[in-house]
Image (cartoon, rainbow, N blue to C red):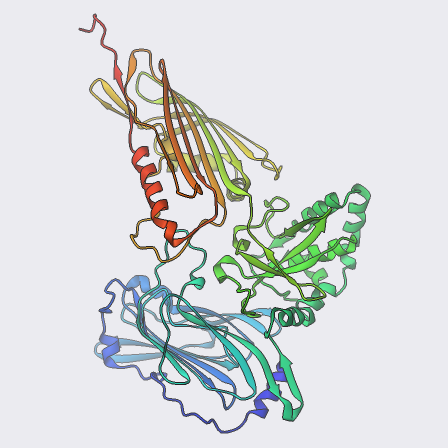
Amino acid sequence: MKRKLTFLLLLVACVSVYAEKSPIKFGKVSLEELEMTVYEPDTSATAVVLCKYGYFNSSDLTYRLTRRVKILKKAGTEYSEYTFPGGGNVTIRGKVYNLVNGEIEEEKLKKESIFKEKVTEDYYRIRVAMPNIKVGTVFDIEISHPLLPSEFAFQEDIPVKHAEVKLEEATIISYRKRAIGHRPIVPKDRFTYQMLDVPAFKKEAYMSSVENYKSKFEFDILNISAHNYGFYSNYTTSWESVNDRLASDKYFGHAIMNGSSYLTKIKKSIEANYTSDIDKVKAAYDAIKKIKWNGIESVYSSSLSLSTLYKEGQANSAEINMMLMQLLMKLDLPAFPVVISTRDNGRLHRFYPSYTKLNYMMVWTVVDGKEYILDATEPFLPFGMLPKRCLNQYGRLVTNESGKWLDLDTDLQDKDVIMYELNVTDDMSMEGQINQYHYDYSAFNFRKSMNEYASNEEYLNTLENVYSGLTIKDYSVENMDILDKPVQEKYIVSIKNKIEVINDMALINPFLFEKMEDNPFKIEDRKFPVDFAYKSEKYLVSRINIPANYQFEEIPEPIKAILPDKTAMVLINYQAVGNTLTVTYRLKLNKPVYTVEEYQYLKSLYTAIINKHAEPIVIKRIQNEASL
């Protein structure tokens, strides 16, 4: 790629047809900008992008981004760090300006504040940390590199006063720009696009990724053509061309095919212990999961030698899954890579091929006619389950032919079953047992979080600190290591300060630690779909026994609420028999994504739950003749 790019830059060493008219000049900060204390269109803003300007120069096929930021509040200092992808030939410069005693002090960005993390030979993850940032600071950063970036965002997490990009027309490069977001991107002239006073993007509860909704251009190079010089390269004209490019990439296709002798011992052990194909696949999956994921999401290997990484016992997501694919092929089982964009990275578009949007790789196999997509990065992930970050609508199967689309949705859910069996004592505390069962994603999340604690005792101490009045007398947990079974927890507890006493009456909330108090859906007009990633179910049975000298004075009315299309429901029921009250609560969300049109129904459903959870059971002391 480096040789091709150098050759191209020589080809286009001609005079630019278009003169650049920039709305910002690097390093030309005004006193007015430094004295600014508030951004009037949004007085709550902690920082504001005063101007960002992207310029693609057709004369030398280079792109330059200039970005100026004003820090308005202490919380805004976090925006002085800037992370972006790039090649090894990125040029970065920056300046920081502060107003001290009426004088402008300037400080240059130093090389020590630029951190480049090598992903592959030609691809880096770059982080810039601007120095001496404080309230009132204005800083400029300028980034230059060959060809186009993956995107130009007009909208950010903080307001943008002026956003503009100029894309000159180059004869030898063909690219696609795709507009994303709910706000219109306005053409300023034939080559320039602009947005002014862009509000900060406000993340709403249960969104998939802000990258699906922020106003921006996404770029993909389709081809580079210099026929007069005998050069032509096809990039992303179709998903088939993306397939071909991945297959020929030395850090993808070549890395996968670059020898697997280091897995021979594991292969022989699996074949000696298992006969069915499904058992072999599961054994291979478990064996590779022992390699520690370093937390880096990637579609590429950082090395051509997977064997070295295997011996080191740590690797990125692509490398771990490439090892799994190699092991399956070594076992003569079908295996192909699946490339995706993770949830945080935004969705792939089936009709707009994108090479730069890909940031993760998994493994596809088929056993007895059933297809499986596998990710071996998570030690607590059961066979056949994908981590939440991978549940992003579609993935692309990369085969020796043309590839195909795979559905990444799952029928597994986030399910909890909780059972309270509690006795109210004379001093109005509660004692008894809590049983909790975690299924599917709830079990995975529980196992993963429990692994962060040094011991069960540390975990229990945390619970007692979080839940005031809770004392855990005994605890046991089952199936922690049997990943395809639900986790079962059993608590023997004492609970104080949860019953409110008023004269001869007492108020008890039967939902206790499962009580919902805050509606995640607060805004009136939602602009984006509600995305839970997977279905969910909460099922609670709360059985409370009150003392013999008390009776039930007031019990709330039951409710049953169902969305019009029956995709969500809540049921809360109360049943009193003698001195025992049984409360049943079930909340089911039967699909992972709800449309904007369904939002009000969902909001009302949660409001009904919160209102009902707030209603206590009232018990009253029985007045006998002696007490009268």
